[in-house]
Image 1 (cartoon, rainbow, N blue to C red):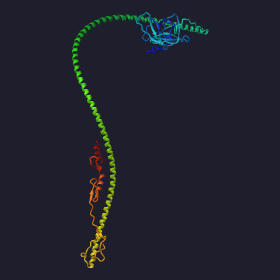
Image 2: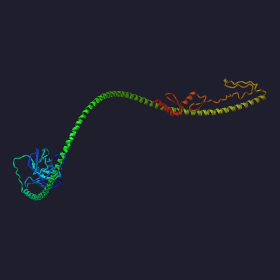
Image 3: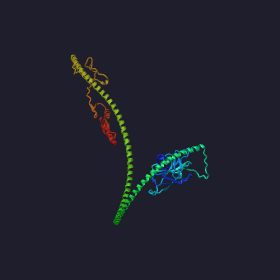
Image 4: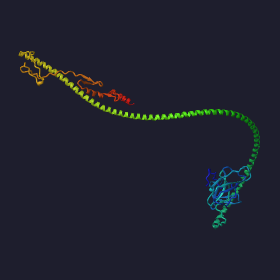
Length: 469
């Protein structure tokens, strides 16, 4: 089938309602040689007006199984069988070309050429059909075949059954012919009506001709006006020429300005190049700054690691501080125990002094009974290096308290205080113990050695972080 940009208009109207006598096909061959272009010649009758979307199609017709009967007006009373029912069953088609003079009442000879590429390749029977843009068939040709030429006549032998079938078919064709004749009568009536309408159209044409004459007169008057306007336009053209000369001078001035601007543009281009060089320098500096920034970031990472280590050390110091606090608690506990023991011993000393005084009084009483004076008696200091006390020669039985050594009264211990936590320490406590106590109570900056109280830990961390920035 032929490939086209647009499908032709078709119709599902049966062939009984088509007007086959309005287009007549001429010089249709019985056989066409395959592989060559064919030209279809046809005549448009005076009662038919072609339109732009009319087309001519090649339809397949079958002589063995015939659903329709077609009467071709180009042959006298010839009847041909077709194998199609509607115009949608075309094999290929071509658009018709409109005549030059559509208003002519004489028959118009036309032709259309079918290319060999789109033609059928089998030996079936085909026929040309003219279809208008409403999909109605307006004319049909006699059947033909596509087969090589053969100079010998072909003898067709039929059987008796086929003859009877053909006769029966002929009777059916006769009946259909009668129906077509009746249809032809109605077509003639329609033709008469169309003729009357055509006369009315001719009268209207005469009226249009008179109007046309009036329009021609109007056109002459309009032409005179146009000539006057043309003269005015010529004068305007002269004025425009003078203005054009002035514009030429203006163009020269503009060209001079353009040359000046070009020089300025060259200067600007040079400036752009300088800026580009500066941009390259800035890019290099940017690269160096980027490297410096990278180094600073690495240094910052190192400082962050240092801070982490300091935090770990701080954690360790906190643990040590806790240990020292525990030790301090133990020492405080021992100090309190020592104080209690000191108080006990002080009370014991006072009791012993009271007993000693009583014994002295008792001893002096006994001496007075014996006629001796206690003050006149020689006293011998106890020799501590000999490991014992000598007896007093003034006593008969010796001094029973000579072995008792009087311990001097312990003086009150002086107290030291921690400058950080205000804790109390005895005076006899070693200095290094006080320093060990003060270390967990204060936080020293590892960079500037500035001391912070332990309770100001957040301030200490912010101070160390400021050194890392």
